[in-house]
Image (cartoon, rainbow, N blue to C red; front, side, top):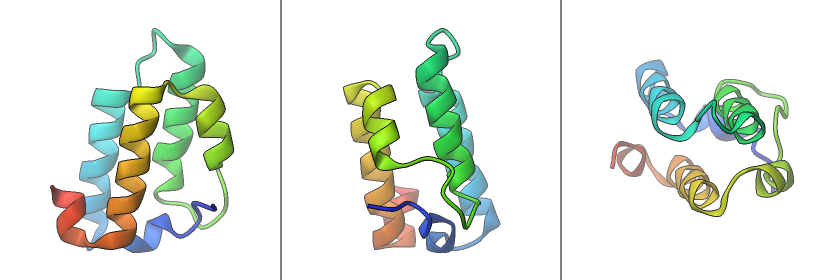
Length: 86
């Protein structure tokens, strides 16, 4: 599964920034540098049309609980603006 379509799933730039802020403040922990690096690549992916990070890379480098949250976010982005807000 590619993540290159994510930037098109937001209502507007403000909604994208809000989700990015949540990722940076609640998921990316610099005490876990490798995991943080890949979560921030996912953060960047939300704005980019090219592949910054793949699902396979996230699976290899992000802990299970945070990976589950990331995959829920991907699903919400692909579903509706309201699910992103929730």
